[in-house]
Image 1 (cartoon, rainbow, N blue to C red):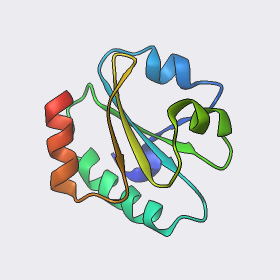
Image 2: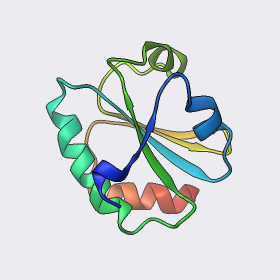
Image 3: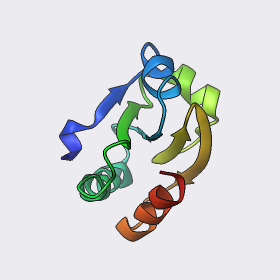
Length: 109
């Protein structure tokens, strides 16, 4: 899965597509003016090649979805939420290495 193939979540579909699904969903909150967000998207693209089939990676444009930012207390970009069965199981901010993200996925998948 390439970065351009990530699911796109927003205020209108988040509850159904993220909170309503079983399994792990990784949600990348980003902003158009955020340089580290572009770096993280590349790392997530690499990670996506190795994730189990039941793991979904998606993005939320933080500039356009202020309700989601407020709901999850996102104060900076990039922020990753790891949501499993409707519950946030881990939150990470900044850019992590591929190995770190793979370990987090293994822990929760």
